[in-house]
Image (tube, each protein chain N blue to C red):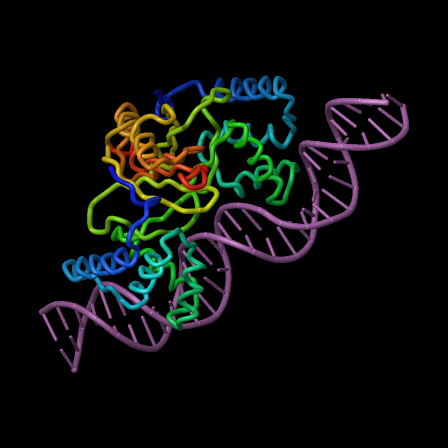
Length: 156
Length: 156
DNA sequence: TAACAATCGTTATGATATAACAGACTATTC
DNA sequence: GAATAGTCTGTTATATCATAACGATTGTTA
């Protein structure tokens, strides 16, 4: 269990290593890491916050990479499907994954004041959600775990 | 921790007691349980599944209780605010609370095949979400915990 | 290079949600 | 019971989020 979302870190390394990791993964898995997909991931890594699809589309427009919603949504679908980007249901927005390549079930903490989002990891099928599901005979395939509140800075 | 969502039960009692509980709560707290609000809750209790706001609005329209989106959204805002109804973020939909009146942090299990939704309870600030938040110094105000998968029936 | 699959660009539309404001109702106070 | 403050409703308009469909293009493989 870890969380770097609210901590200081070398952000330029985030971007470079994020892209490199995904690039390698795509080569290994014969996936097409096309210009639009790459750019959308870069934008999300650079911004380091949750962006709406139309916000991303605005960047793409400025750069001549696409101007219609499906362009952004298709790139996002690809990135989400392969775990490079996560969708934050509470915000209808997207954020770059902090652990690309690793299998994981993310937990998000969303600050209602500064809108920052931190990603942490939990073990699947453990904890209360796992207990509840076992008791009900429910087979979990995917989880959405998002907490809304105040980040350390905004509590001060 | 309990879950009655996937189990058989006397559904007519659900509706009656749900309405009665909320009615009493509203009297105690000087809240106006208006016809539209009451009817929206009844619809959600009767259907016993997650309904979109526009689906609810269709019922209201048929009954002459309102025809424009704000009518449905306002009633839902009220019901959600006071914990009589929960919003399922994953579905952009609403479902009647199975434990009205009690303070709680719900967990939902959503069947992707039959679309049924079960509500269970967890302790706030315990389990992995609590651990993660404490480690990050994050102050939780609200949580969204939703699992998607297969209910007992649909696994067969 | 032919055949096939994946991706892209575009148009159109669908689905979800809220701002704003006037008018009606309710509760409270005098 | 009249004034008034607060809440709720009805309506118009619009904002925001998301996808269906289809032809053109590009990439992959045999």
